Length: 257
Image (cartoon, rainbow, N blue to C red; front, side, top):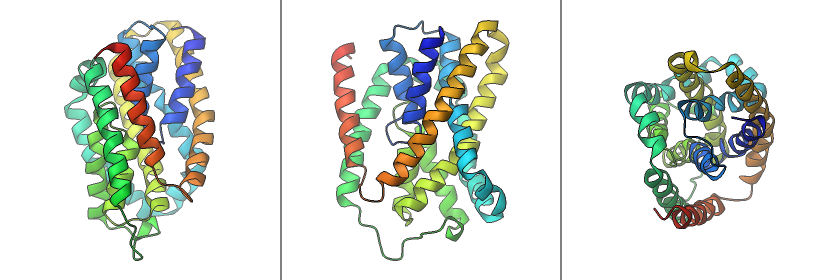
């Protein structure tokens, strides 16, 4: 992979990781548009590049996570379902789901439709929780179950987590921030597992591409997080649902899936 391709994928990852549009789906589709070889390294790159986005969350929220032990325990409780499912189905996720445009595009399409319907029906209650430490451990665990659905490319980890939190009675800003924090162990574990299994097969030049992808995704993710926090003050996620539908239909036409 050349450095320009690594930078482009870094931009895509940084923009899409924390928005409810599926970063993995966007990375896979972007790589196909650029006609990059569908190698094992590319699949690993699409997982490992998330490290940049993780570091963006740590830079913005690391102090809060470290200073509040209850928040840390809630994040761990929410991480457990995804950790178990991701570990068990690692090979299927990487070798089957990542190669299937049907799964990615239909997940984007149906996820967009669901997102719109949910937002039209959802009404935030006055008693909705407005602080992360106010959550219960069962609520956190259930949010983790929602997140685990996102092992399917195209579903969107952010969308699954945020919708789950809204259903369970959290305010929008609260669950969005919890989604950011939950990304740290979730993506960190995914990156670590993949690098342990795949890094031995990397060529020397591959690490340079990875490093550039990390750096670009880190900078762009910082901006993306700040954008989303500002966006949710006055908007719901219907525009993202519409975007997902348009994107899926466009690629369904391009790929004739």
